Image 1 (cartoon, rainbow, N blue to C red):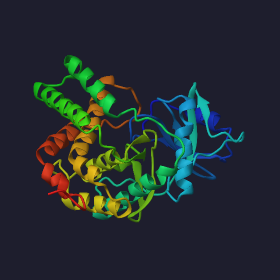
Image 2 (image 1 turned 135 degrees about the horizontal axis):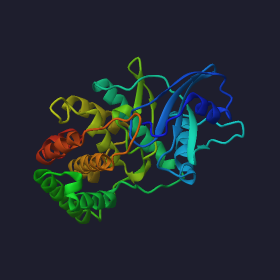
Image 3 (image 1 turned 90 degrees about the horizontal axis):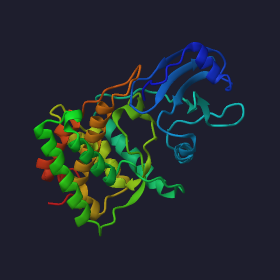
Image 4 (image 1 turned 120 degrees about the horizontal axis):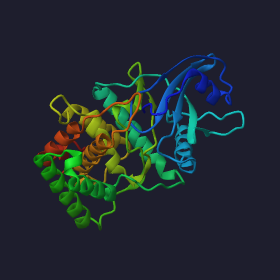
Length: 329
């Protein structure tokens, strides 16, 4: 979440006049995330979040809106899109699609403990389990092919991306590892389904230490479920030494496996998947810095955090395996 499209109070009123929200009391931009423009809007009828989609066309958005509606029907606390007076979930502002959502209670947790991680692990397993019934399909735009193509592009433009010699060597080595791993294990079929693909700490809310909402499903897609678990562990369980905290990671994965146990192929591929997840977000943060998107509010997430994590994953395969309930010795 960020603010790329600035709105004055007059413009906000113009956009929201097609909703029955009462009078606007106050509004504010949201800096979390990097893809869309978001505002908190407080009115005489309630609290809302306005999202203006900067990357997607209107015809691409029903997948995400229908997924969130599906998850809500199955008991997950996710945002609900509010229809306007014409019973439409999408509107437009300056040729960009926009939607209004109810604001879920709670706040993001910047420094989670094992209890928070346990709840996130259970929620993610629940999403993966019920997501098997979701009828729509969306390819992963940030999967293996994106990783390879983006990595090679960054290596070909090191002057622009300002990759130093050591970072370029790390990226080159990891691309080769992931390519070889993909080819060697092409005969394995990891369980696939709907994944969130971006369940970082700023995309979950807690109220009184209880999970109260999961946000930002706009990278959701169909992909290996293990990849989603790796993405989530890499962020929520990061310790002060820029590596995984054992207790938090163990709590998350144990809670996850109580609902959806990992099969033998997933157990075997776990260390490589942690590396793939670290590489994916190292690349996206490098790419974001290169693109230098101009926004009134946005968080510049440090690529080096994921680079350090990736380096440590490469040297700690046994530790990664020890996090699983039935780990391979």
